Length: 272
Length: 255
Image (tube, rainbow over the protein chains, first blue to last red):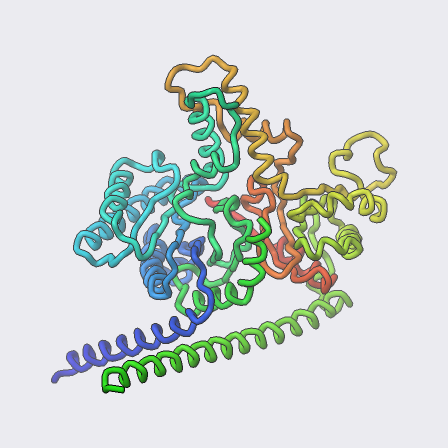
């Protein structure tokens, strides 16, 4: 057996051991309550690229995508049913046009890659949803996103909601508009009055329950216009780690924090 | 008992022992986590006292002008002790904060508004700022009292105003309301129902967890949210540190 084969075999054994260790850690974690819905504010891609002297406008975001695949795998193994990713905010369109175009192209590339994975049966129970003002995306990306949603429609193990062209303020305005138009188009003699439920039905993120845990990377202490309506009873966890550097232990730590506060969170939900 | 039954019983026992073992390990990990929190709490307390005593020169001057509006979220159980809230407001006034929004989900602080305004020197309702002779103090502390009714309910009131206006207007068929329901219109409608639409720069959360507990969503976009721990154990040094840290933050607001 030559050196390359030995290294290959060693890598396989090492990966298998790591996978076993990870499954054991998750088994222990699952002895306690697991959040039903975890949201991620994926901040720090550009700083990661700068820190590691990576060239290319999308270099940091490419590294960020790798992190997405690992985090989703961990969430699926833990058994978290809903994950939301804040991929691109409405305010991010104000960035340099070249950067925005680069990010959109990268998103298209990754969506098309994911479609191929889904068609090949490699997505294993992951359903993908794109939410936000999708009309502000270019047509190719919009069509690809729609295709990915269709191809993964039957999957039920993990729902991944990708927020693109999203912000809470935009979402609220959109939901108010939609619900008002529906009320105006409605028939009958009932008084035309909007309720909270009418508006919440029309929100982009109505496909998922409210998050239990919001994890923000990159050290920021703010929500950056992300799900501020839905996070009244969410534990907000912030880490200085940049998104591409987020690893298993960061996720485990956040879930341990959630488990410590679970009684309080449940009490708050019952009060509502 | 035959072999199959024995095997099943044995598997069941092994599974139960396994579950018990995992549970014990989980509890042990949480014990270690709790110890970590206790140690970090002690370190924070010591640091806070050092800051209060002026031993850390870094916090001796704060660019308070950068903090135009501060909001304080208080957990409902802790909001019952108004004396602590009053003490906090006095500290904030000493630091030089000019505008504070006080939030608790059930409006307990709103009900204690008169007591708070009567006890905290130089405090006035933020709506009254700008009225002539409303306060003899040169540097009043403007207070705003906020509760959950200023969150979703307020947005619904504003939305219903827009809806009624839209119904009364002559609108084309298949109108999707894109020119009628905009952020500007919703902002204006919120002002009409008496809501403040300005976003606080910094939100201090006093309670068991870091959560905004239902603070008006419309105002929270880029607000820095800092968890301060329990109001019962609040420390002046920690408050100074949080405000100082905020003044050093640079936001790019998504750009």
